[in-house]
Image (tube, rainbow, N blue to C red):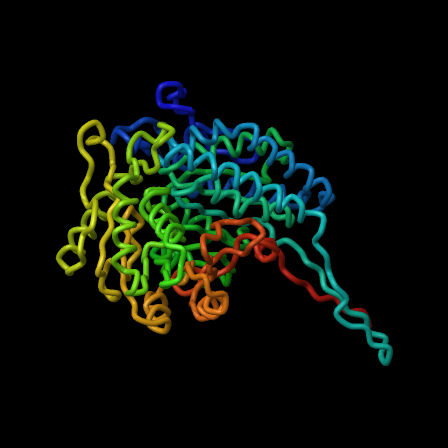
Length: 487
C-alpha cells in the first residue's frame, strides 16, 4: 500500500445504537482534520446525552439475553469477529492512518495485534469457572462462588491507537457476558465505524456493541448513567480525574489506562545496539512518540553515556518523517495543531532549562509544511526534575539522563508520579530481576521484550491508572464474584 495506490475516500461515519445506524445526532457535528495536510476531510455526527441514553438502554436490553448466551456461542461469535478483522486488515490499516496519521506499516502491525487480542479473549468465553469455597460437615454448610458479568460497560477510548484500544477492552467484556457502549474519540472515528460494521457481520446481536462518537457531554452522560455498571477508560490523567469524580459519586468501579513517563535504564554491560535501537525508535519514531508506554526517558550509565548519545543521535536523525502511506516512512504527523503547539512549547522550554539539544526540535517545512510534522527530537543532559523529564510530552521527544550507580538509576526511574512501564537493558540476569522488582511500574520490559502481548496483564500505578488489560486479569476486570452458601 503506497500513497499513489490507496483509496483516499473517507467513509461516512454513523452512530450505532442497537441495530440502527444514524447519520445525525443531537451533539452536532465535528470536522475531522487530516493531520498530514491540516485540512478537514470528513464531518462526524456527534452523540449527545440523548443518544447515550438510548444506546445504554439498548445495551441493557441486549444484556438480558447476551449474558444467557451459551459461552461456546459467545466464543464462536468473537472468533468470527476476529476473522473478519483479519480479513479487513488492509481496510483497518488505511482507516487507521486516516484517523491520526500513524505510519501505515505500524498500523498494520497493530491490526494484527488486535486480531490476537480478540482471539485470546474469545478463547476465555467458555472457560470462566467458579470454585467451591467451603464444605463443612459439622453444620452441613456448602459454599461456592459465581463469576458473573456486570452488565453494561461504558468504554471510552483515546485517539492514538483506535483499533488496538478497542481490542484491549471490548472482546474481554463481551466474552465475560457484558454489553458495551463505546465512545471513540472524535479525532479518530473511522476505525471504530468499521469495527461496528464487522461486529454486526460476525453475528454479534444488536445492542451488544454500540458505538457513538460524541461530545464531552456525551462522555459525561455515559459515565454517570445508572445502567452503566463499570467504566473502562483510556486517556490522560486530567480527563480520568473527571471520570473518577463521577464514578465516586455513583460508587461505580472503573479501569483507568492512563499516561506514562517510562524510564529506560541502560547499564554499561547492555547490548548497546539493541538498547539504542529500541529506545530511540520507540520514543521518537513509532507512533510519532504518541504512546503512553513508550520509553521517553533514557537513563544511561555514565561509562557508556557518550557512546549512547552518539548512537541515539545517529538513529534519530535517520528516521524518515513524512507521508504515512509511503512504505519507508517511520513517523507521521502528530494528531492535530493543538498537539503540535503543546509539544513545540515543551521543546522550547527544555532548551531554556539547560537540556542539550542533540537533534531535531523543529517543525518540518517544504512539502510537509501544511501538516503537523515534527522532527524526531533528542535532548541530553536532562535534569531528572525538569518539566521535560517529569511531564508526558506525547510527541517525538526523548530525554537522556546519566547515572552513576544502580541505586541512582532506580531513583531517577521512580522519580515521576507515573508508573506505567519500565525498560531495562543489561546482560546480568540477577541485576535484571533486582531492578525489575525495584521499579515502581505496572510492567517491566527487559532487553527489548515487546509491548502489548495479550497474555500479559498491562496497566499502571500512580497517575498511570488502575486495573489491567490483557491476560486473565483483563478478563477478571469484567467479572464480579458472588458468594453462595447452602445451610
